[in-house]
Image (cartoon, rainbow, N blue to C red; front, side, top):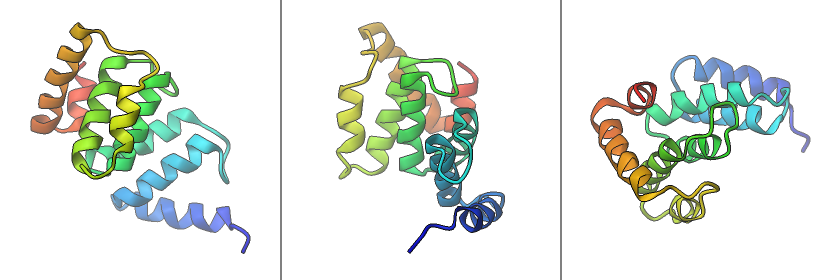
Length: 135
């Protein structure tokens, strides 16, 4: 069955604008991959941020990848490390986030790991977006 991206985009935007975290995540994927929309990393980050802040582990993981690779945001090993850890703890049985964290493109230094752990604590107490925006 062929994919109808226009219809998918319409319904995902409608749901995402009603704070549906799964729709927000899927919009992020569409923009990240250029599926049915022009590839736009900034838009992908926008939607991943919304979904990640609401606890979508896949969005947390993908947002970490965006920071890890500097796509749509400045590259930041500390934020990527923190998001990978948050994602890994959101779904402990999902080993992907832990594997990606161990193979980060820019391996964090011990100092950055300590900063990342402090950021994780802020993310858990204040919310992901508020903690990231305060860095």
